[in-house]
Image (cartoon, rainbow, N blue to C red):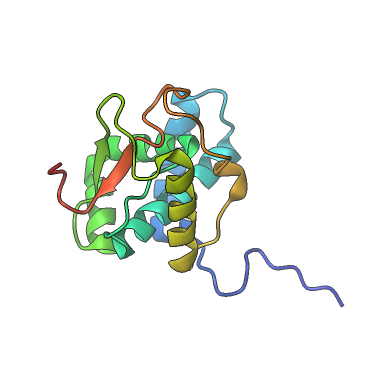
Length: 159
């Protein structure tokens, strides 16, 4: 007898935090704005964005940073301000601010340390990690968005 698991035991599917309607709306927007991303990948991005945000809500003491693809999900979601604010209040009890770093400024320990810290926080929060969406950290300046320079802000965006 073989048993197949959709996700590791003890983990929560972060897509459940978002719901199918919102996942569909956000995924469609990602595909429209980023034609190189297919619909299934866009759905995975939204789930990992939810996991990232929920982990940051549970660990506001850590400076977490999204991967390049998860940052696309975060940027997309923020455009849906009402839905994003409702999600933040439900999951974090507060609005989760998106705070890009100033040019040349790096997150604590650099991109590799931020990636490891973020993945550990997501895992500790009980969410599965979609490893394909979290490749090895890029060097600062290698990405065209604010990857590894975007953080969640536990201090309400006051830096």
